[in-house]
Length: 384
Image (cartoon, rainbow, N blue to C red; front, side, top):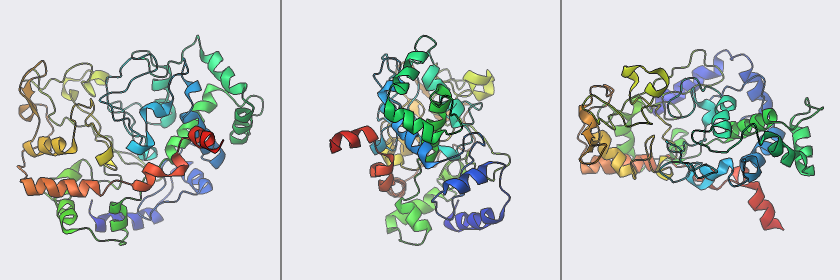
């Protein structure tokens, strides 16, 4: 989506009808957003508030939330990496490795679906149950045997008793429960926003790109590189929804990353939408992530199998990845299941460098260091 198209969209959004519940919640919270970014959809039963956001921030960084007290949500979502973790795949509280690369939580309030390939996970509240309660693999390690103990940890803390009461005054009988823990962390995640990159300042007319950045921008939004077909929304993805969205689109794509059998197969347990639907046509289909802050969120792809952004650009320039040897050997460019949007474009070395320069303008340095999103327990320890 070009700069002109984004600004035109902003004007249209300003006059459209609000989705039920979402706009009221957004208004009471007071979203601070550029004019081309509409407020996200907020569940009517979990409206935003500053007290809830701050409680969620404390919980997000608190290791007491895991069954064995070893990790927090933030262990896989580091602020300085735009809330990813720099690992190939995540590591849970008991050492189990997750099958997929930890996605960023940034701007997740605008996602029509959550995680890499599950069309059923459409709210942060529902998604959070997976890392909390999942047992294959174990992440946070919460289960029926330790749930009461974990809740008791927070009920025994006088500060938490006050914070929960302030965030959930309607729960006067007992404000501390897994229901309110999930609601608070979801509110924090919904409030982690990133719209202060060089790209945003360019959109707002505050700066001009360098010649190389502008060439990369034009490639990105042009019909040669065609990046914008899967990463063209104002959040640079294609599952963007907001408070006024009626019917969000939820496409998933096979990008030719694997073809291990000559028929388009991806290696288990990472076979994309196919693992949910069982439909052979869904093999290798994953959600296109937002490219905001992409320069600091490597390694890349759903399984973290691509180490650098330069390699990512090479793969798309080729029209798919070729793996020469090993159990995953195959030519993804030849996959019969690959999306028709992924074609060989043969970018020159200069064009690749230009595209990389543009992608680096998407990094929001404010996000990476903002005290608003910082670990409150480190802040508290430093002040003592």
